[in-house]
Amino acid sequence: MFEIEMKAHVRDRKEVTQKLNTFATYLCSRNKSDVYYTLPKIEGGETSVRLRTESITKNKTSSQEITFTYKRKESITGEDGNSIEVNDENEISLSKEDAKVLEKLFLDIGKIRLTKSKIVENWELETCEGLANIELCTVPPLGDFLEIGQFYLARSIFRWGLLENIPHCTGKDRARRHRCNNDFRRVRIFLGMLF
Image (cartoon, rainbow, N blue to C red; front, side, top):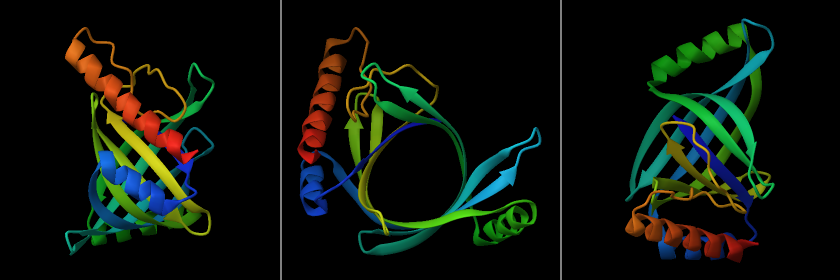
């Protein structure tokens, strides 16, 4: 599974929230606690993995999820010169007991590289390529950020503009192309308001 992800600093969280609510569907709030471990690679060098604990509140109901993530990151420069992160993301859900076992293993063979927390409001946007995930995050002490991501089964070539996360549809179907262009327009207008 490949993830295309864009990130942008947010100046006015309240304004961004109001604008998101006009075209995207609100899902839930999440408190994410991440621990990144540096582990040795067999062929030399190091790699990084993450254990994330999320407290999720949706419709006044709370739950908790733990996930293990291993990403192979790559940065691609678009035609406009903007850099886009493309991740080969491998993720599994864990029980608390499984997470404890992995924590012990990671500390025995590696070390903690970074811990961070995020307070997140989460939306989704239906696009011509499927659902895009939109997160409005507070990352202490850095401030507020907007993260827009979409998952794909295969790595593809995309045409990107400034902070556009919606790939251009090249299909011959006019209705699909029209819908995709509208997706582009909505995201362009919204992101244009932020900067």
